Image 1: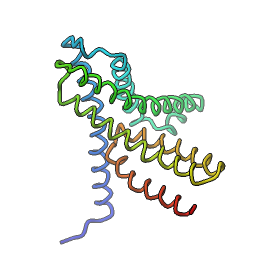
Image 2 (image 1 turned 90 degrees about the vertical axis):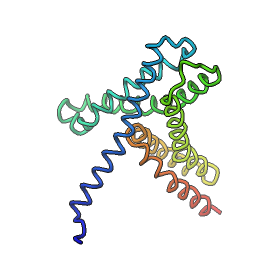
Image 3 (image 1 turned 30 degrees about the horizontal axis):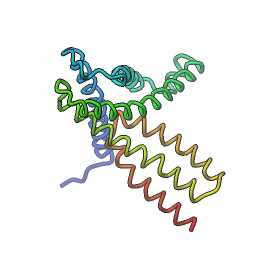
Length: 204
């Protein structure tokens, strides 16, 4: 049997990345269709201030991810100039912050629907949104907040500030990946927790 070549492995890796990335995109679309369904059936008990934000975020995220999948920051700058690059980066951080808020609001919204026993909101997509949001919040806490807390407690101010910058960078990466590739984000949790434990042990 012939062993796979480096080119074959690269193709397989690209295929796996594409499939797992599509899972995240499908989750966004599925959630959007769920919100649209609540509106189409006039589900009165599903009305909540967070629902409007969730719907608008999904429209923004789907559009943003479609644009960024074909237009990288470097390509945007080369096509439209450095001013557009600044706008691009600003919109990217709007997306990052909006993503974190989206998952928090989604958990609160689904909890509200279940607490109100809203019959017309019952749907497998509601459960998907709920558990997807919980998974992402756990990932954010594990990869960003816990390492920051560990460094703050065990280290000095300078180290905490340095870790804060690293935490913001992690939040940027994770919030970006979470929508398109939640599986890859989840795989980073054990490594981040191990690094946090090593930090504590080094300080003792």
